[in-house]
Image 1 (cartoon, rainbow, N blue to C red):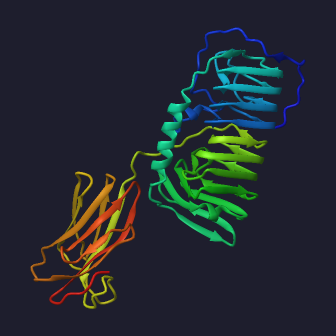
Image 2: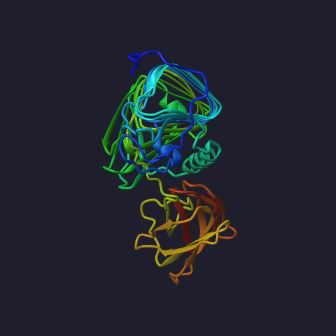
Image 3: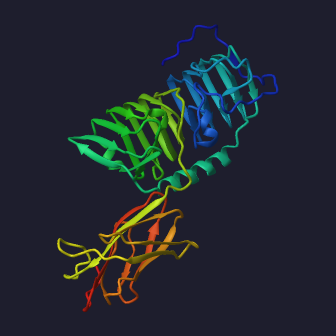
Length: 407
């Protein structure tokens, strides 16, 4: 929304009066519950500089260094705080030419140069209530950890349109590369109603431009795109539904809107930040799932084929190397096993054959999560398990005699 000045021109360059402010960090357009910490209650949360013109932030805006605003409005969709809430917070210097902070205060840390700026339901005061360094440490750490969560949803490219599909009622995690977001014409997210959608995007330089977005089942308040590696993020011609966490990125956003919370290192452009509730609930650890098969490996391939029977009872043991964790399970009638892991770390997998048939181990197959096969010790070593890891195909091949190399 482009704000056109309708009030008389007001210039503030002298030190304004100081008043005690009650900072309501939970006040937003709509109540929210999110894992974005203090950034939860802001539409835009920028750690360094913010330069914007001819547009608006419908909610609250926090800037950790300098802000330069021209023909700009803040907080139009918020309730009237009657001077009890800071809606524009700038840690260092604020230069603001023509615009309005509709329903709250302007807080600045060093200096404020205001020309033609209205503050009808608040006031301008020195002093900022946010510890930006602490917030950055918190969100940097969360971004890095969430990036390690294993994907449990699928990604398909339908003739240039990406379709993300998840079925978990609580959280659906997707992995994308920055190149996958390049030149797409559409993005569709399918996930159960009320579930959180976490999209981890890898790559140092990313762009989201000129595509439509459609969300089915859940909604944008539950969607978070995590650009943990990005140092630059370009957005143009997009109506993005959801929140964006790019704590190390310079965001260049000149055309379009983000309906949610944007967290970034720096911001420049005229893109619009539209107010929305944020309901992102990401658990500290999503249980990992490790599965495989113990079978009679007649051909020594490490991969069961038709006619090679599964073996039971065989006990599968998963023991932590870097963490004090221990899990065990028994194969089913088809020789299959599944272990749910509740702690991240490095693990070793082994078996105990209780069939009484005198089988010997002839092959090992490392599954999709990785690890190292050691046929001599009868173990799969150094299996890395992080939040949400899904490791399939950890197979133990047994036979009555013979020995086969590792796979």
